Length: 253
View 1 (cartoon, rainbow, N blue to C red):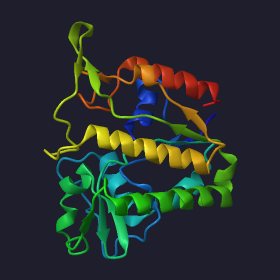
View 2 (cartoon, rainbow, N blue to C red; view 1 turned 30 degrees about the vertical axis):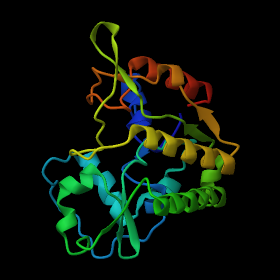
View 3 (cartoon, helix red, strand yellow; view 1 turned 90 degrees about the horizontal axis):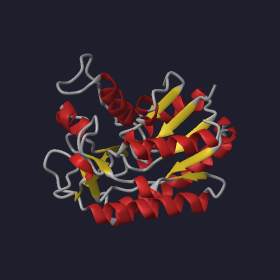
View 4 (cartoon, helix red, strand yellow; view 1 turned 90 degrees about the vertical axis):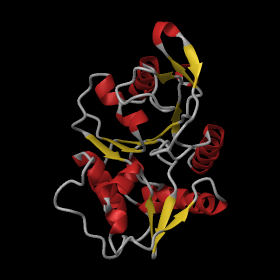
């Protein structure tokens, strides 16, 4: 049986429930960023014993993992048979917290942890700025070096290439442009600039890891007005997931 690890987002994780497949042999690493994965832990951070209001268990745990930097040890221990990357979660700004970096996700904002003394002096690093670009390009090299120096090297690499959809399918097969895109909580997002960023990230990854298999479904990359998680540029129509799943099965997943 495949033991799959995903460093990515819901566009890959949702394949299992949408296709009706069991996800018990799946390690899902989300709400992080490659630079954050390779930074020190946030010194002095203390997670709450009870779930902060508004967060589910898996949302809280992903965010805590990003702050405590336990993810890479979990990944190596998991010994995946396949390692899948997608970069849709690489949309959030980063926070510099002392020597540490963290992803400024909705989960972190909602948790209330930013008011802890350990995080109170956090400084933003704009995702679409040059500093974040440099940090990410350094981190992708670190990630591939770690993979090649550990048992992870035996797992085939798969890059799930995607972009934010520009249109969504509404009722009666009508297609409409996606407007007023937000990251979360009223924070606007420039869809075109984020897609250009994904192009750069994906090109950098494949240049450094030419052995990685690449999967994509550009013809089906349309947002779904009836998606289970709501309308979003990266909540796609069912045909998208079916096509990506077909490609993964062909790679032995």
